[in-house]
Image (cartoon, rainbow, N blue to C red; front, side, top):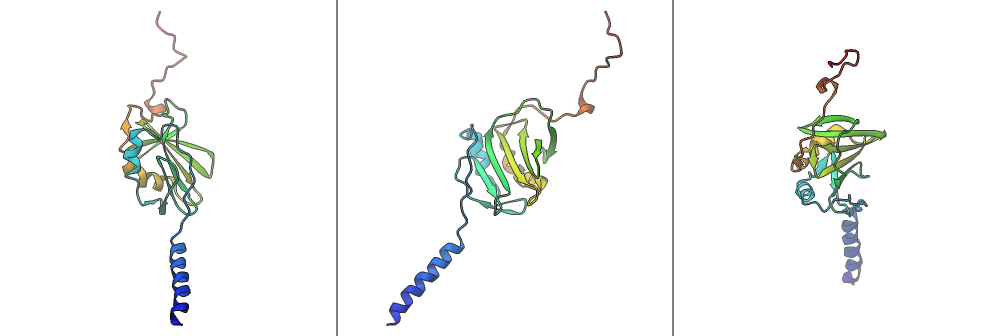
Length: 166
């Protein structure tokens, strides 16, 4: 009756192997313009790691997730920003608007590119800058739209104390 004992043992071993590789799918909602063809160009180029975290499977179109629990999330097809007063940074040639109102989670929106992309980073687990550096190659496949970050040094300042010419 060795066969009778071997079957349950083999089934248990197979179940253990199957369960050890299971990582749940990250539930996400697609952005409004997730069906933009430019998002497909980005998603197929997403890296296996982001900010030192392994990539995870998601359940929504044009999204990406890294970490367990997921600490870096990417949404392609978000609203394309126009002029903004948010802090703007440049990482690997790509401009990003920084929203830190929900710190320690940061929302970084690509600026000057279409389709636009949000990267949400839990800064207690992953660094925003390393995440953007890892994602920059994929995001570089979006199309520049001419907008760039500027600061006061770039602006034309009008001196209100000088009278204007008649």
